[in-house]
Length: 294
Image (cartoon, rainbow, N blue to C red; front, side, top):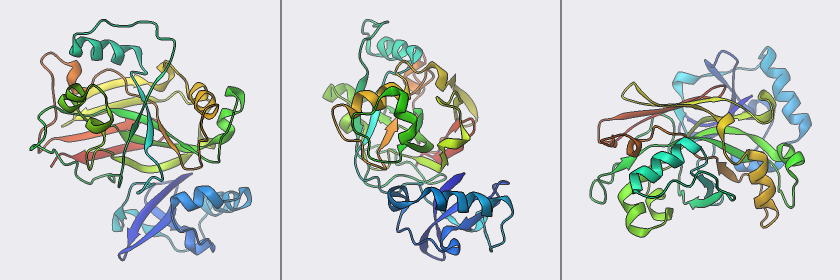
């Protein structure tokens, strides 16, 4: 299922996309009263999920044309900072080391984690601010984002996918010179508008465990990144196991699994984003997230 947040007649609502992706079945028409996607993740039952799936097979209730709604990120306001994986594809680790003129560390024993502050996630189609008063080296990073479905504490890798609600696309927009200047990633990853997400959450039952999906990005139609989530250095199960043994991963937590090679800083010369560019991030089985640079 593809669950999404949208606005219709000025009101924020939750819905499920029909199989042809042309219409939305509003969840309130099924008698559900979830206040937000975070609330849905907290409270939805297996019986309610089954009810949605039954209705999707042949909708008997009125739907809303997808073209008539205002898009929102599936989780417009994450409850906590997003937990991100740094250099979690070998080819991106290599291009990152080359850009920074550092020694490439081929075999890393431990994952690199950092957080990304998000006051409000950017919807599919909405602009990414370029912050030209602060930076010149604006970059994109297509990433698979994992949404945790229930509180996870001391979870084994074997059990990890029982705690996954679903998946979405995240563009980990980055200010490269701010990252370099501060010698850490938090500020350079957390400027306002630096978290496009969407266009919806696809529930975990749509994929194998682990999902091995094509992941790509395009700038102005030019293919930049082209890889597969099967090449993650540290897997989804590993990350959930490791983190949950030291902290509670609350329902609604978003884990962004890192990006493959092909980001702007990886080219010679670099290909950074500028106002007027359009960047698209695409993951097989999920969809495409497209945003102009303003």
